[in-house]
Length: 72
Image (tube, rainbow, N blue to C red; front, side, top):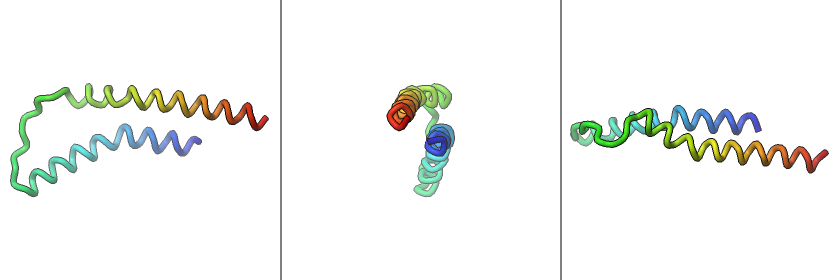
């Protein structure tokens, strides 16, 4: 269970950065210029993604507690 939480947290905090770098790399390969950012800031984007992650985290904790109660 702990491994799943570590993988989930790594995906949340590292995933968007890697995706952003990939998008820049892809555009530079095609010769496109990287446009100015018009959407929400990077921090606001990360915070927006953390909502579902916290819901998933609560679900996993409740699932763990339920499994512990059933096996006891």
